[in-house]
Image (cartoon, rainbow, N blue to C red):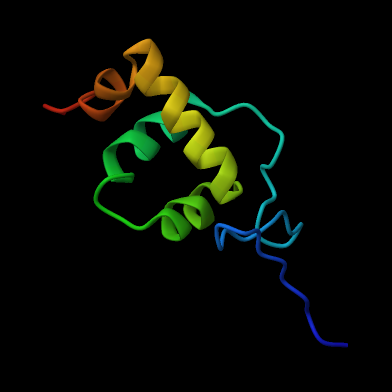
Amino acid sequence: MEEVYVYDVNYRMQYHPEFHQKHGKNFTEDELEYLCKYYEADDLQTVAFALEKTEAAIQMKVSNLRKTGLFEFYKNRNLYY
């Protein structure tokens, strides 16, 4: 049987249980740090696969972090360690 991957109109992969095992779960502090450090350096799909969440969830979280001013906080967290 051939695997079927579904993409939305923005070419983002939709939920697939094999790739998005943390879908629907809250982001940990470490995941938020990773997200903010690599979101601008890597492509969206790579970050989504690394965090095991959908691309849409990643974009939504980044948007919310930027609105609340926490994106830069997590991006610079542990900068000197």
